[in-house]
Image (tube, rainbow over all chains, first blue to last red; front, side, top):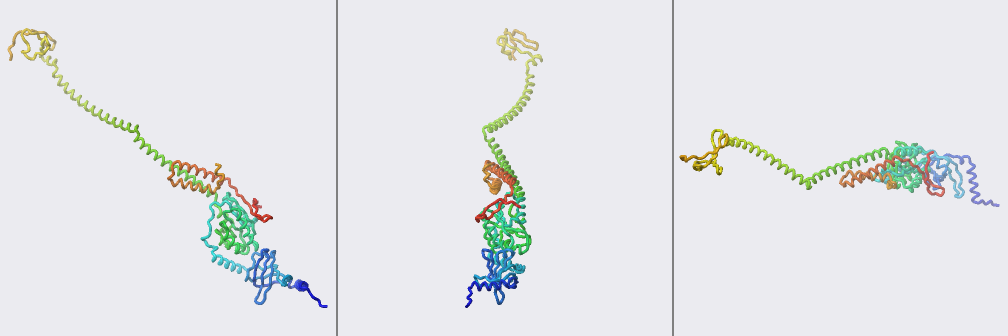
Length: 401
Length: 77
C-alpha cells in the first residue's frame, strides 16, 4: 500500500531533520543584507546573500531590541542563529540570535550618506531654523526618565529659571527601539502646549547615540511644531539630530541653558528698567517745571497786578527824578536867596537911620515925604531917626532947589 | 493688583519694556507720563515678585492603559 503523506507531515519531517541537525541549530553566517524590513510588531525580515545564493532571515523583536544599530540593505553582517523550516510557507529560514556589531566604518559611511541626503533636501537650512522664545513658559524634554541628562537639565532650570514648567516625555535614548520611541515621545508633547522641546541624552559611543542618526528622528524634528534644541552626547559628538534641530547644544546642561534666560540677568534688566523709568519721569518733570516757571514769569508780566506794579515803578522813578530835580532847584534858590538877603540888608531903613539919615512922613496920612513940595507951612510931620520918632511943624517955605 | 493675577510673567515683562520705551520716547503729556510711570513701577515689582516665588514644576506625559495621554507630577527618584 502506498504511503501518501500530507504536506504537513512531509514538512514536519523535513523540519525535524533541520531541527535535529547539530550544525543547523547553531551556525555563524556572513552575508550581505537585502530586502530589509521591520514590521510594526518590531520583528525584522530580510535576506542574506552572496554571489550565488540567498537565505531568508528572521530576527525577532526581542533580539532586534538588543541591538544598538540595525543593519541596512547592503551591509555585510556576521550573524549567529539556527536554520529551520517555516511550514506555513514551506520555506527554510535563518532565525537570527545575534549580530556582530556593525563596523564603525560602515556607520560613518551611513551617517555621511544620510547627512548628504537630508542636506540636499534642505533639512539643515539655516534659513528655516526658528528663534527660541525669550521667556518659554513650558518646555518639553524628550529623554530617558532615569538618565543623568534629565537630572542635569532639571538642575540647570531650577538654578537659572525656575519660572518654567517642564514636561518630560520619557523615551529610550539608546538601541534599535529608540528611534520610534523618540518620535512617539515628540508626538505625545504636541498636545501639551509647550513653547520648545529639548531632545537629549548623555554621552556615549557612536552606536549608543545612533538613534539620533536615524532618518525618522531627523524628519520628526524637522517637522516639529515648536523650536527644537538638541543636546546629544558631549561637545565632540555631532548627530543628524543636531544638524536638523533649530539649535544645537553640546551637552544636556547646555541645552537647558540655551532654553531659558538666567533669572539673575532678567532681574538686573528689570532693575535697569526701573531706573530708566525713574530717570524718564524725572526728566519729564524737570522740563515741565521749567516750562511752568517760564509761563509763570510771562503771566506775571502780563497780569493787571503786574502792570500796576510796573506803572507804580515808573511813577516812583519819575517821582524820584522829580524830587531830585526839586532838590537841585531848592539848592539853587537857597543859594540865590542868601545873596539877595545880603543885598537886602544894605537896603534896611534901620541901617540907613544908623548912618544918621532920617525918614519924614506926613502926620495926617502917613505918606513919606520925598520932596519939599509935599509939605506946606504948618503941616505936622513925623521924623524918624535911629533912636525913635518925633513930631515937627513945618516952619516956612524953604527955597526949592 | 488683581488684574495682574491673570497676567503671565512674559506679558508683564513685555509690557514693562513697552512702557519704558514709551516713557523715554517723550512726547506724552505730564498726566500720561505719570500714569506710564505708575504702570511701569507696578509691572516691575510684579515681575520681581513672580521671579522671587518661582519654583520649578515638573510633569511627565505618558500613555495610560486606554492609550490616552496623562500628565502626572514627576518625582525625581
